[in-house]
Image (cartoon, rainbow, N blue to C red; front, top):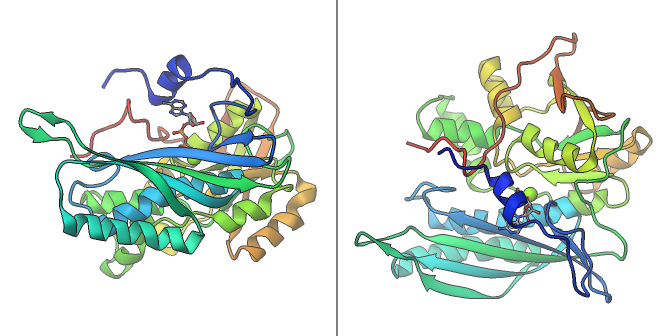
Length: 335
Ligand code: ADP
Ligand code: MG
């Protein structure tokens, strides 16, 4: 498609300063962080469509789980405690088996994370040429924050370290395997596919980073794309050391070119990428231990330069940066 990209659409048509009694920084962070006067709320809204975010025949239990997980991941990026969500769902037809499985996956994660379903809307998807459009699910999730706290994408400072949780690139590698383009050992597939189908929102880590991290985002579009959101909002640049980027054992078996593609440009990992001053490194390691989440220091924030991010090997050689980030209006369609 040659339309303007997703982010250009948001900037051009949907970015307005916030107004009214509830104060927030407005559009541009993983969550809107709202001062209600009585406390601080983090609110996010993510839409999932079968055929876009999922294969049309995806396991409905996974669809339910992941539809909520991606929203909880945005709450994690703000450091918020998940409290409630609203579910709007458009269905092509009534299929009670599909709905029972979808609801089981959704509510398993809702219970696990203490996030209650408080409302929503249910409708039929539009009919075009005699066929209904596939299911579309929109979730709005809300969490709370201690007074005056909350992580955004805009606080990164030159000299800060750049950190990432868990491992990156697995979800993209799983997608490539599902499409039949890449192959891994058959016994490695289930774990790889689980990273794509059932991502773990880093909720406890996000909360443990409050007051320690200067900026944070979750990795939905790709490590470099989501880091770029932090860099743009914080008006800074960054350098990354390739060997420091945490890869899973299965990703490490792929060619280096595929590792670069998956770890730097692949999306859907739902890990956190965040920044903190070097003096806070002990606190960050502690936050990782407390939340039982591995954390790795992968680079440094620089003063704003012409190039937003450079990736280098430990020997100082430049790594060619693969084209980055998933953009719904500039995307290669899955076959
Ligand atoms: P995320 O990947 O964390 O869900 P996105 O990249 O989808 O965030 O969106 C970037 C920012 O733009 C977010 O602050 C989001 O709330 C905002 N946004 C996206 N779509 C719209 C829209 N249609 N109207 C207003 N704000 C939007
Ligand atoms: Mg996000």
